[in-house]
Length: 225
Image (tube, helix red, strand yellow):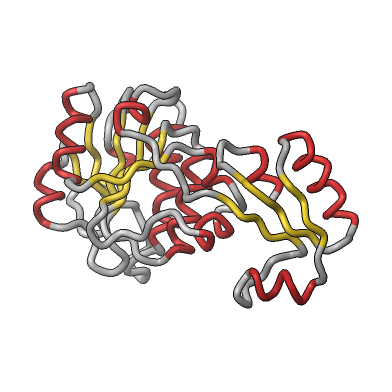
């Protein structure tokens, strides 16, 4: 809730049950001019449709996605493209890791990829509200736009012939991650400048996509030259 009030999200009203945490939320809401309504815990449970609310529920506008030019023009060295991520908890974890790695933003394919929902925001611990995210109809067109802007496209795949740590340091990188289980689609894979994998013990076949994203972002963006 605090992250929502600190973000650019248009929060119209907050519903609170009295507690020490609620008092801090109320002060922040007052500074933003957001209406506050004190209610019983049972009311919060109803408003949250049975979800975990931690004593506060917000009434807010629909999440505002960034445009692709806005995302590319932002500060940072790289972007993440997600194609087919369906688990909102995975998306939330990836967004949190991407923010930690100081990426410019995350690009989501509208086809088969979950959007930014309340579950995603919760899984990201609110970080999703502070990171530019855009949704595109054509991931291929977005990849072409990034190439024109000087980015190198790096697809992550467990069966790649080369490893991430074998790539030279890239100044402007776009990391592409495929769906849980099936990975990169063939057409998306062919559009990549490089396809690389994470070195792993042979006894481990694959990693959770959010874990793999964290390792890849560290290797591509945060390692020493």
